[in-house]
Image 1 (cartoon, rainbow, N blue to C red):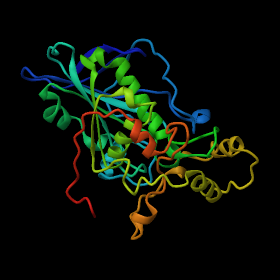
Image 2: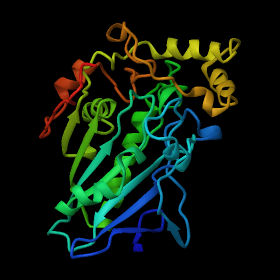
Image 3: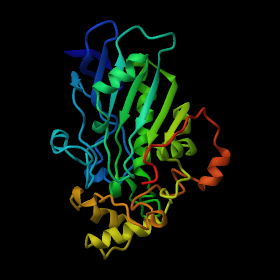
Image 4: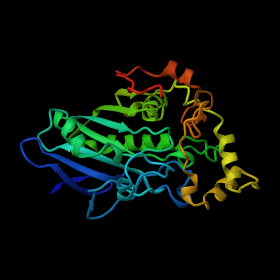
Length: 320
């Protein structure tokens, strides 16, 4: 059955009622756009707000997943939700019963995948509703740009880097602006994530652009100190990627980006592989100390960050 209709800042949306029996019914709003599609001239740009719409927008299925070269999950699952550069969608799973005074606490989950793969469909919907939302919580899962589309850096103001983290920040801004319409308490937001998602949670805590958008944090199996988020020289990495794509001659960073915008999106996917020298070389596309999202070094930002209540943990096969 269809869910209730909720009015967001961009317009009305209607999802599905995923638990519709008993006194703890749950609505799922899936595939809500939290920013404009980062395609065409918006490729390699920070996320911009999505345009408003008239009428009621149907939000009953997951939005496309970010471009990646490899996905966990079955072939059926991959067919079910395609890969697309147009990937900036989130999902809200919310109780239908009366919220407590101030609203339901909110949890926002950032998926992992080495900043190179991953999506929100892998974490499901009905299981989130049954195991989490029935405990009086609103649960939000988000997607963000991955690989070179998410972490391109020219090392200057043309494209400083960390677009995937700017996406996560835009999603948090959307939650702050809209979650009250779902019965949520925007003053009680817990950000959690696993692996690269755990590192993202810690990084968003350290950046002045995002730290005030949530109140508690659960980084699982990853944080900003991990060797694999080693903030390597992304501008150099990105220039060598451009060379692989046949782009060698350009005068300015703007010209380089213009040429890269003409390349088909699927060519920017990164093939995730763990090599024997993984600890030394880390991942191919990672966050970068860019002077913008991160105005200072991680150590300096750590000294200035206001502490938040934090719970942390690891996964069972952590070292493998």
